[in-house]
Length: 96
Image (tube, rainbow, N blue to C red; front, side, top):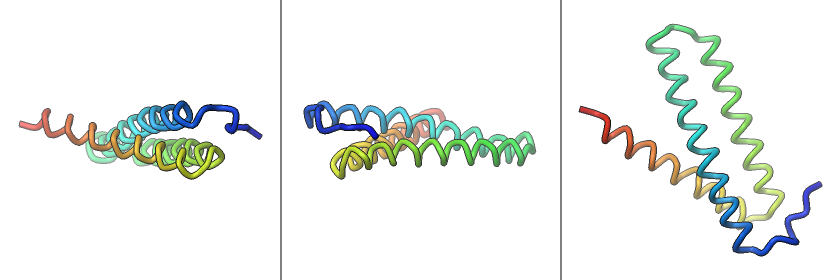
């Protein structure tokens, strides 16, 4: 089992936020790839595999954040939400 009590709280929260950003960015990139696979290429089995992969990766990352405590989980979730906002901003900028 991992012991996060030895880390300073500020470092732990910053690491969880950064991890949430990375995981969130990967999650929403995979979500976009999944929709492209279903709508454009017609590969539903590949899309299903990608969906299971991104959901299990997000669940694993949030479980690790739970092991670090409630504030760490909130920091990781905030990172995921910020990654979502960044992806939406980028999509709006690309749209004609």
